[in-house]
Image (cartoon, rainbow, N blue to C red; front, side):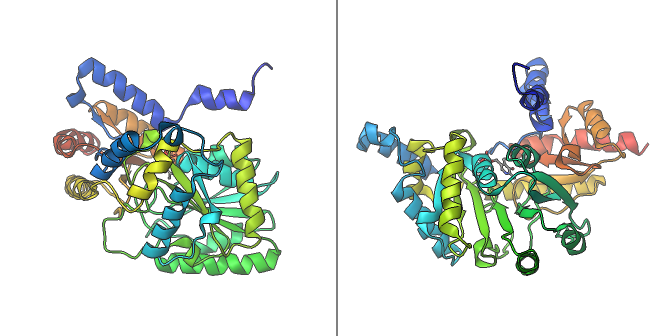
Amino acid sequence: MDYNEKMFELGNKGSAIRELFEYGKKRKAEIGENNVFDFSIGNPSVEPPKEVSDSLINLLKDKNPNEIHGYTSALGDNDARNSIRDFLNKKYKANIDSNLIYLTCGAAASLTISLNAILNLGDEVIVFTPYFPEYKVFIEKACGKVIEIPVDMSDFQINFDLLEKAINNKTKAIIVNSPNNPTGALFTKETIIKLSSLLRDKEIEFNHTIFLISDEPYRELIYEDIEYPFITNFYDDSIICYSFSKSLSLPGDRIGYIALSSNCKNNANVFKAICGAGRALGFVCAPSLFQHLIPYCVDKTSDISIYKKNRDILYNMLKKIGYEIVYPDGAFYMFVKALEDSSINFSKRALDYELLLVPSDSFGMPGFVRISYCVKTDLIERSKDAFTKLFTSYNK
Ligand code: PLP
């Protein structure tokens, strides 16, 4: 074989989200941009905060070009790492050490680097369904085995009976993602306390480290007045995988970080493994210009009140029509119950009304569709008719 079959499979198939996104582009060219209700992809619709463009212009004007476009240290520029530490320690009363921060090309790189740093062949990683489909790709490429556990459907929190049964001698890590893609649900402080306590017990029982990987690209996108349980404050062996893609609306600029808990066992060596994985994967020196931007924008977000408004309009509109929905506290996704058993067929039928809704099967939980409401508010308002017709087609 002159290429890797598994990689061929991944490249050949593409993700369900990307397929629908590509279909949407084609369809818009055919019938006009305004006639397609594209809720397929999580591309931020709110522009970056003004500080982003102002700071970029200043950096380009005032700084030495060879510095801002040049290589930084493999693990990232010191000013950027210090500013992330200061922000996290102030906002979340955390105890982050900048020596344990590694700058990355977004959350995807944060996850692949972290997984490759800690997994050995056959190690198991527990994920809660529904989950971001790329986890499976990343875990398997890092030689791990994916163990899926459904969340408790009544409140979208962890089902601890199932989790406890699933943890065994091979369990190396658990991935949490809150606020969640695809549901928008948030794990409560009580859930995180209970999870941390269970993992501590299991570490003692199995006599090895169990890492809690917190994938948090939506951490700054929470619409209710809820305290965010910052993972390293609750569990020592934790790794934060962050991205500025969503909070600063910079998904194409590929900038994020890994922050290893300063209380993690053996943290100096785990961090060396993170640096090693970054090196092995070719993820050294995250985009330099955007590293230099971080100190100016680390505490800023895009105007998230627009997403909140979108959420409220869409939620109320769909509820009124009759759809069943998980109430989303954050991120910019809504998880809506399909009106037939097959969410794939439901998503296909939605296309008849030019609605692009991602079937939930690829998130490891059939029976729902994901709606990305990071779109222009008027698109949501104009989609009412289409959602009503789709609903009526099942309830004649
Ligand atoms: N994790 C989750 C849950 C996501 O939704 C995404 C992107 O949508 C990522 C990771 C990857 O983020 P990034 O684009 O920063 O690599």
